Image (cartoon, rainbow, N blue to C red; front, side, top):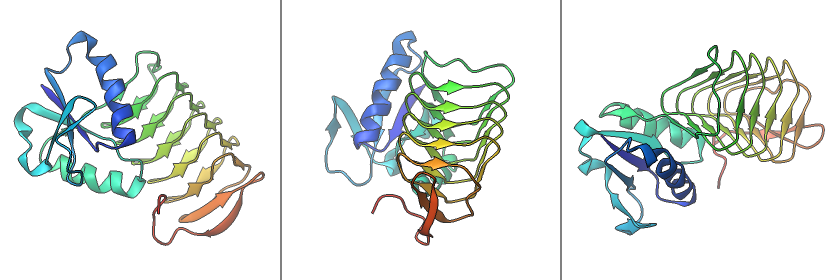
Amino acid sequence: MKLGIYGAGGLGREVLMLAQQLNQSSRWEEIFFIDDVTNENVVSGVPVHRFALLDHYCTEVVIAIGEPAARQQLAAKVRAKTNLATLIHPSVFIPPGSHIGPGAIICDHAFISCDVVIGENTLIQPHASVGHDTHVGPHSVISSNVTLAGHCVVGQRVFIGMNSAVKEKTTLGDDVIVGMGSAVFSDIDDETVALGNPARAMRKNEQKKVFK
């Protein structure tokens, strides 16, 4: 089995580091990047291939893009051809009652509590904390040092910026963006950009895009 990392940018290189740690037990015979934008043929010592040339019969793919909507689009593209790979850092303990969806990436020293659901193709970055009974929807990005308290509901394609905290029993709708360093004390409606302490709605996320 081979691993393709879709995206050869900064996040892709970080995912490569995670994959190399996991591959100390020879999980994959080869790791490479998939990127249809860069002109580079090699990044961080690893070859770069185009998706159209992917040998899908012996390859699983992980999405290494930080934009939630793009994560969803690329996941659909990949699933039409092969399987999504799930990468969980060795430092992370997943309790028996918690569920991790296919294609999820859980980075080093993240905390996943009991009876948690992490949706498919979701990215949990280093030192994030997901409290008990919390559900995180597919294609979302939970940045480093984010704390989600217990019984939270996070929708699809949500982006929560670094060092943010979300109060227990809080719901974040689909396509929500929470700016870094925010403290969320109440529910946030779909397609809303919120930030601050306490976090307040600033505008609609009409373009459904984090990075511009």
